[in-house]
Image (tube, rainbow, N blue to C red):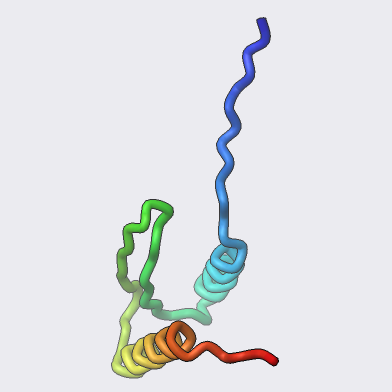
Length: 80
């Protein structure tokens, strides 16, 4: 009797991996000094946090991100 072990198939988001690698490299080199983030997991749960010393300029950038996401969701660009 042959025993077959189940293989876990995990879907990964390559863009997320590439972005995190790039940010890690910048942090290791000292270029990246602070970060704020929102995370979402496979089970749908979300979280948030920061590292370093966030400032008002970074909070303004978060507002820009929020605006851009809403714009993309509700007013998508139409291609001809």
